Image (tube, rainbow, N blue to C red; front, side):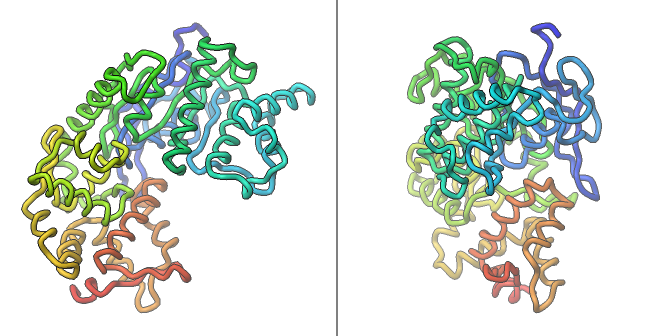
Length: 440
């Protein structure tokens, strides 16, 4: 293998799920090169995580070719380690035992394996917690264990699938800085610890623009449903990177413009009530948050620059884009370039009392194919209601499993807000709500 041979490579990759097939990825051509940190950036449901799993060999694409170090990939890529969003720790094992899982199958002498585990635990700041169990750790500490376990393999490529999204804002920022430090040390900015001597290549999945700009050398921008690569941008922000550096802010704006351009291009295809009957993938946000964004823009004469809105709401830009997207799906707001505008329907919503708001939102939700489908399934279940887990399983035949879980979570919150569905937490059962019964 030469230095210019990609660690992972996708050529003409397409991926579909379900019956009838729903295309999740379309025509993906992508290389992950040695010595780079590559971020794949895009909205929820665009197939980012699916693409990572294809590159790692965890999923076989419907069509197309995947290569590892210049050779056709067969099975799982043996040069990668993955840090998952949900930690994926073994609860019956201590911190040390969980990290030790990372060296399984490497055929290392016992003393060398033990030293490597100790080095990785120290590297992520968990020395002193070796005998703790996952239930005794905070979310940030659990993710540090996951990172240590991945590093213990000294992988060619460290893959991180939205590794900070399950953490609070402060903890997520702390861990981003830790990963940044590890990457810079491995690149020779400091005396690299032995455990990260091979950490020169990282593939990160994220929906947060600032996270991609902070960590990545190249940033892949994907469009939504089906996921396509809109553009690949070289990150020219100099090191050390600071969030309020003008160059950093300029790159954030450039990426946002690329995402907005891609979403405008897809607008006709992603309209609510699409005629082809596809079930929309929903942003994982709450209805109260969406209405709150509409209120903020309304207070600024119904039009607001997205970056001014970001500053006003103090939301991460990626999450704010998800809130705006949800507002667009319900026809409460519209976007033109970097400008968010409140629609006539959005203004009407804000002028109504709470009961009338619920009725209007119920009307808009009924226009979504996925809401229509869920209401039909719940109605068919009868007076005993529909098991939520069973509904998620059925939805996963129409959408990728990860997106189905997030869509159902969002939809359940939206529908309860609009009184289209009732939900028994104790029994995990869905039933038709008052406004759904009125509409029958």
